[in-house]
Image (tube, rainbow, N blue to C red; front, side):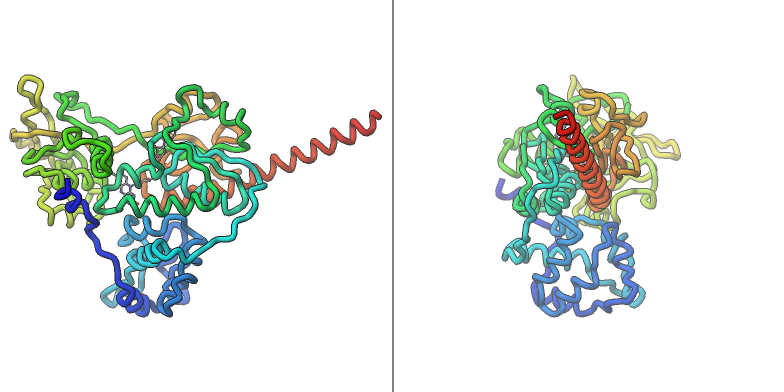
Length: 452
Ligand SMILES: Cc1cc2nc3c(=O)[nH]c(=O)nc-3n(C[C@H](O)[C@H](O)[C@H](O)COP(=O)(O)OP(=O)(O)OC[C@H]3O[C@@H](n4cnc5c(N)ncnc54)[C@H](O)[C@@H]3O)c2cc1C
């Protein structure tokens, strides 16, 4: 276990104070900052980099806090090469500013030193229930708590964090970092109820309204994995990537034994798909001791949705890639998976020995919440339908949704971006109903006064 824990150590090292400040000093502080344009949540990047370059870490953190509740996470897992860093004008001269690594440095320093103590508003504006504690739920909760709302999160897992805790592996995003970010949300006065599934044991949307919540937010993600209907796909040795990653995460935390993780020392593992999840599953299989890990993808390297950097690191770690190829059959010997048949686009077929096939071909929303109440409409794939005004409200009054459960599987920062707008929608809605309630109460009082 100690040996494996070492393998799960974070792969990318952070900056030292000296290196962070040197890097920050390279920033040109452009008048029209392209990095900010490249950031979905429009982080005021040049401003906090400028503060850092002068050694003012508290000010830098303050600026970051005004836009993000998860900077230590975003600093690690955002696709920076496509966003802030990709847009930096210094790329034309060779090397753009390492914005993600700087954000991570400031957030980690704040996590170690507790630089910021926010002044909290009294929680008088209303009561909001948040279902799910992934990036969308945590963002809504943080933004609304800061604005004076009472927020309670209902999370079905034993710990909050969603994909951050049970999907993205430890070597890319250490769980203690996620816990530290969540603690900050807790310190804003947000209450967490873990091991609590909405849509089960009598707890549903109607019950939450009965409990006195003024609005409800669904940030429940896309936890239902898709399956390819290949002959042999129902064998024991065919597993879903998100199931596998969750179990490894539980094992790393000491909550499962080694036997309960399907990849064994020396196994030959095939991963179907070529997105982030596939890369994580393949690299995790390597860390669990598989001797041969191959990704099989029906298109080309240029079509993969995984980040180039993720792919490069997977190759470095020994993962092999089969492009323009599909697994078309999975065979067994007395119920134990033992072979896969791979077919290329050109029609060539080969059979290879295999111990395990991991599917990473996408996911969709579960229907637990919408099927246990009425009035929340979804599209034909189960994604929740929402409106523009108030932003994020579903077809059921007072119920809002955002993040992947609305917009399809995307990224942490895009789920946060959506959630920030939904937080505004919820604040407007709750303020409006409270105002109407106050007017109606005034009218009632007048009427009873008239009657006297
Ligand atoms: C393996 C993997 C790797 C990824 N890597 C990256 C990456 O490197 N960078 C990046 O930007 N993005 C990455 N992503 C995508 C990113 O994690 C998601 O887009 C993001 O987490 C979506 O946030 P969310 O809050 O909408 O949903 P989620 O993070 O899925 O959170 C949903 C939460 O709702 C809870 N929930 C669901 N139903 C209920 C219920 N009925 N009652 C109570 N709780 C419920 C779930 O337990 C979960 O905690 C990755 C995704 C995966 C699966």
